Length: 203
Image 1 (tube, rainbow, N blue to C red):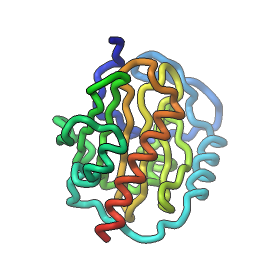
Image 2: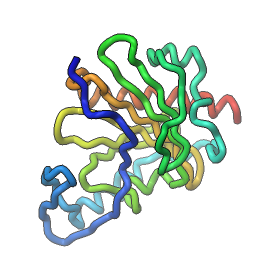
Image 3: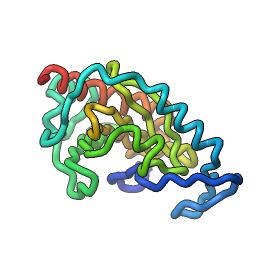
């Protein structure tokens, strides 16, 4: 069984860097990626402008992320393990969902974060090594966030559920090479939509 490196919390945190000249930098693993230019900064603002207006506020502060998916929804996502809190939760309450009974193995992390979704496009959480795209979920402003280089390993869907509050659902490929990047992003968006349905029903 070929497995990817152990999944954990991967965040899109970083500092927005604006430069007037194109250049390259290096990520922590030595892979070069472009330093953000003034033009790309403008493109990020254009992406933010594409996000729809939130139809209502669905606060997640104080919400247990493990409670956001019902048993039928977990079955729909093919989750076989009981939802459990993550051992490490530096960015907010996090729930781990495992699909580990049969290959290909995968997992989800569901998080509630005290930051506005726009932060990943134009704010302090924007990271130049990550690809971010507007991808509304259930009528709410949302983006997909992933590292385009290398073997597809994960994709995160970030939904702006309330001012300064984001619901994040990250899909991880545990079996290496079993999922394409688009498929991982589809999986995270599907799980985010299901969690959003739960929030809507409560509000």
